[in-house]
Image (cartoon, rainbow, N blue to C red; front, side, top):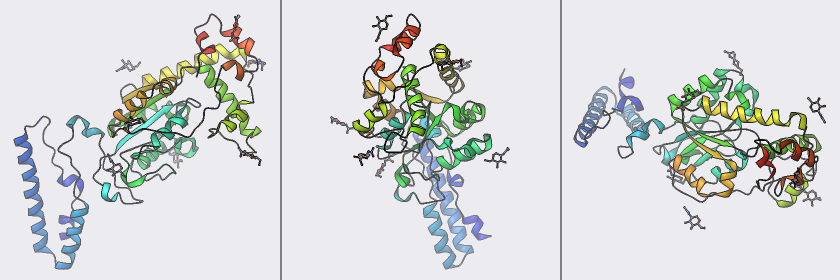
Length: 342
Ligand SMILES: *[C@@H]1O[C@H](CO)[C@@H](O)[C@H](O)[C@H]1NC(C)=O
Ligand SMILES: *[C@@H]1O[C@H](CO)[C@@H](O)[C@H](O)[C@H]1NC(C)=O
Ligand SMILES: *[C@@H]1O[C@H](CO)[C@@H](O)[C@H](O)[C@H]1NC(C)=O
Ligand SMILES: *[C@@H]1O[C@H](CO)[C@@H](O)[C@H](O)[C@H]1NC(C)=O
Ligand SMILES: *[C@@H]1O[C@H](CO)[C@@H](O)[C@H](O)[C@H]1NC(C)=O
Ligand SMILES: *[C@@H]1O[C@H](CO)[C@@H](O)[C@H](O)[C@H]1NC(C)=O
Ligand SMILES: *[C@@H]1O[C@H](CO)[C@@H](O)[C@H](O)[C@H]1NC(C)=O
């Protein structure tokens, strides 16, 4: 059938020149591709009536492959030209999209980090999509969800649709990431997904934040609503009024376990293209954000967030049984957690 011959798919017209091909060879390939295209088209013109021809030519225009001969060839595995089912990428359909995932643990600054990312005009970071249990029930539901996100078909409040040049989400270690690491690493490496590790140095502060956040789930200190992130110092100080008590019997064990799970994630995902960040370094040093934009190969922009830190100031103001905690950690590898500022 004429229709089948004429329907250009992206793959049909991409003829990859061999790696490190000289410019001349590349030219030959381009000319060859053009001649092929003209030949197939002229075959179509002969075989179909004018009305279908017009339709088919439209298809050819829309389906024109996006192939950038300018780009650094080592980057090609990381460039994607998704064709979402839910909308058209319009004038940006030939802008390459990079795929990423922020791997983190709860209360490590990943919510704040995502608001920074999303303040970039070309970044879409979709939030904690695997907090939905059905999406992480088994390896196949995880991979299906990933396909949807990376094809830009998962619409969230962060979605920037047609001109996104980097799309991703944040993924907590305890949301199927460790359990199905084999399948996920394979997917990441096949698709060229870049990994941004974001962890917190001060695990004691993280523990305070986890305890306070889970207390607020039922205490709902802000006029009866539970909030994990706030946008004003008043809200922050209201939430920080609650001072959790830390079980010192389990403290060292808990800190060790947190450390071990970070180490495990780093090992499992060490074959991916990745960058490692500490929350504390992002706060202290804004050039770290430039490194992230550079890592995603996007144009530099100043990133901003309206979020306000909840537990600011010395840690002793935020822990009920401070003296016990101080005594427990003194002389251990975790002693520095007592003093650090963030
Ligand atoms: C995976 O989980 C989904 C639910 O999200 C279920 O429909 C499907 O049957 C499961 N597949 C396997 C192989 O267990
Ligand atoms: C970023 O977004 C802007 C506006 O939507 C668009 O014009 C531009 O081409 C995009 N940049 C990239 C690198 O895709
Ligand atoms: C809670 O309610 C009070 C009084 O109505 C108001 O002034 C305050 O802004 C509210 N706070 C939040 C966090 O909504
Ligand atoms: C601390 O945890 C241990 C072990 O689970 C438990 O036996 C103990 O009662 C806890 N202490 C406090 C003060 O909750
Ligand atoms: C990644 O982790 C594995 C398991 O610990 C280790 O054998 C391997 O050498 C690591 N690879 C790299 C590139 O660090
Ligand atoms: C970011 O802001 C600083 C100071 O406000 C300015 O000097 C710099 O040029 C800005 N960078 C970009 C990429 O807009
Ligand atoms: C922790 O305890 C030591 C005594 O063991 C004390 O000198 C120090 O001031 C305490 N630190 C804080 C921040 O309370």
